[in-house]
Length: 292
Ligand code: SAM
Image (cartoon, rainbow, N blue to C red; front, top):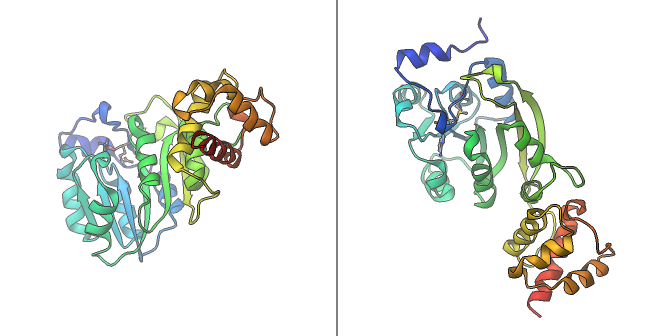
């Protein structure tokens, strides 16, 4: 089958056993790889960062579309597969490190991407599922210079949570956080049969277009995220209870009632009914209340 990448043969040839604890579910369907790469809308004047290149199947396709590929892979057992690929292509740089240990601006943008003459950056990755959220949030929170778009394959449930709007059960702190930094959408679903070994969950590809300007004004960004976390941390409680129980937000139940009244909201509402921009108003008023 021409659209099938024979992952098993490569693993046998290099005597590699997939490591479950590193989330090693390798893509074996080249149509899916092509569709993920297409979501990146790459061009030769852009650099792309790939997290977890694995056996290099997507890395190879990315190197045809982008000017430079920086691929960060934690597992040194995969270097015998990845290093020859990098040598043969000339525009692939492999970093054998844990992505979470890197300072992306310092270690990748300033040290590799800018010196190679690139200013526009995208991220395309089939993420290891045990650390999906920390990796996605790292790229969003570190204010990565030149970053325009992220395309991630993640568990379907995480894709749903990343792109959810107010009201539904998927809407939570992750939806608000991702929405603050980017405009996200789910591109397509991918069944377990497209991987070997097969993961236990369905997957989906999300694309996140990084916002050039924040969607709303915040008095204090960290405080905003604390408010959002507190609001969703106790989902069965009313918003007023959840916020006043979080002592570090410095608001009594009466303070929260007064703020909700000011916002024209019922005192019994739950956090999941607030839109991100309403969380911004709430957080700004709570911040004012704390510092008065
Ligand atoms: N891109 C390949 C593919 O699509 O077939 C492999 C994807 S696999 C789901 C995830 C990859 O991330 C594995 O190669 C794994 O070793 C790597 N990985 C896991 N944890 C990592 C980390 N902290 N930093 C960098 N890579 C990591």
